[in-house]
Length: 395
Image (tube, rainbow, N blue to C red; front, side, top):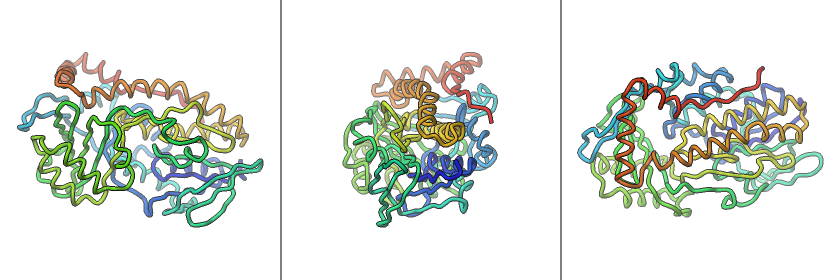
């Protein structure tokens, strides 16, 4: 185990989580990230169930909570800004025994990354160009023209994984679109704040949400029903902004004001709402973790938790197998695969209720939120929605 050199691709949440486990178990991690610097910010995610358990297991719960938010209310409004349905955030915290809070994805990534900073080799602005497995290891070619050898390569590089493409095949063979696109950005000094409230406006097939952040910032999330537009996913931010304006130009509420802030956005998250479903996550000396292997989709709200869980279990199995990759990788898949299959199925069912495509669907969602105001029923519904758990190994 102590001699294993591990290349980890991706510095989001999964990659630093793997590196954290490597250092814990005495391995030698090298983390590469194609972005030139660490990427902070990002859309808001909720932490509960497995995510809460993993932060406890990593010893990072208090650090994450310090960066987190407790939303007092989830409100859906109509085109005139009047409330059409709502539910209090305290309902979820009470139902889950206080084990529930929200945090920007980038902030959670930074909490994990700080545990490896200055302790592991990290190469920014570096991408994987090629890899070749041989009996004693893996030879990789990096974008800087370097050729290096590692004992293990871990793909923790997200939905559009380069490791997965090189080792398993094109993304099209594994991606399952749920029929939506999503975009998110952050703006400063937006005049409508509603501190502690997550506010959403929806029309059939699309939804715009906002929430106030610290430092005078506000974050915005767009979700809308649309398939394709693969050419817009990757790098053309101007085309992505134009598409957002075209899709939401006729909407009411504050949408025109929000779209005005879009042009000045330095960073725009824009992608399909998709799952990754694979018959296997490992091949020889290569393994995938997190969204690269089993993305549940952005709308599932638990991708970060599953990334940390997968990283933890993979490193646990490596330690238990004393570095025997075949044994460890088989145990990793055997332990996690049935659970992730259930989570992906649940996430696919949930997508339609997150952004209903019909007026009837919106009405059903409003009615469901109304039922959640009933104390006993609301508690039961909240626990069924957010009560996921996983039996973690001891130690």
